[in-house]
Length: 212
Image (cartoon, rainbow, N blue to C red):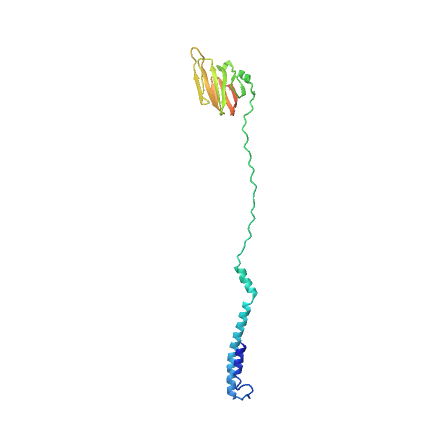
């Protein structure tokens, strides 16, 4: 920049250093002044451009802005919320209903009872039912197997309990009926109504009533 200005100003000198300056004609001086007036604004514009470019390249703010824009954006991770497992309610343990007469088999002698049986037993029945004794043979696997003696030559059944078979009577032996009932099933034999209220493991609750 200084060299350019020196060369421009040297155009006003006509001799070597130490030589006297010769006077120029007015027209020559005016022409040189005109040229200087045209060149000087251009030189100043170039110098200003260089200064601005130098300031821009040295501006740390612009570098920080560029670096900030190039830096990846991080998002805050949402906290993970853990929930304790829900408590599951235990299934109720199945139980048999409490029979009205407990294990007292003799309560059935009048034709009305509700008893609990757990093994082979004999249950007495009234003569009006037209039946002999009721024998409980097995209580197992959700079923009760029973055998009832027939005291008459004629008998009737409503076919309840799904598995009821009769044999006899014969000339030398009375007839009998074999009954297998599941929990909740009911059968009517002659004038007796027999309901298996429930069966659980090796226990059963039987209800005996007069048939209607």
